[in-house]
Image 1 (cartoon, helix red, strand yellow):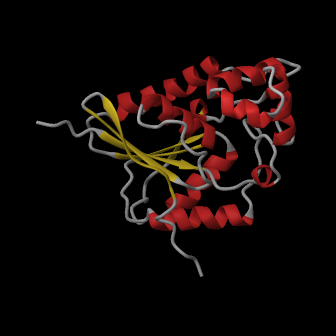
Image 2 (image 1 turned 120 degrees about the horizontal axis):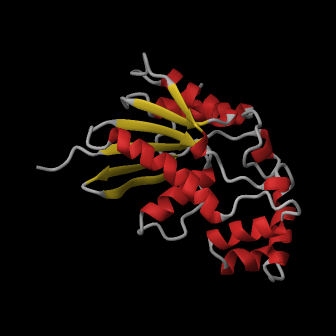
Image 3 (image 1 turned 90 degrees about the vertical axis):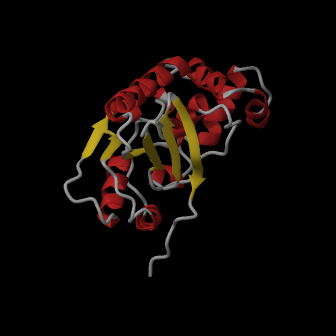
Length: 226
């Protein structure tokens, strides 16, 4: 008989002011914009009929606020609490936190020996760019790929151990990089997928020892709010 498994609903937080201004946002906290709040509500209304059995979030304010809004729109959220987990934070950009993103990537490209950031993105992998960010950071505080991956993998293994074979739906509100890198490493069919939209939903089920992608970067469930 097939295992019950577990289904994870990974939701990226709503747009923040640092997102809006095109600045690097890893561990830095910034409030959601009005547009960000509206999109999270639209996403939450689209998920209103999904019965979540547990809710997790990174411990940063933008994901906690997003999780609260989603639960506020859900028809089955009574009694659910948000479990904050540091493991699901975004990658840490060190001294580049809050800097203009295009300027930072130019510095990383130069560190890696490329003439432009466009050339760098075309010819490097995500791990290489993370490691390059650490090298370019004057304080060398930015996370390299293995530090980042070990952290988020630890969080996911904790959830799988807790919810495997329960048949439950688990909501995980995290960050664009965190969710994207998790799914890339777990699902071989994802080849260099697009960056995640704010408030988008990616669904992955885990059963019989394997992860299965149900949807990625989905905003089709968004409802219109008057």
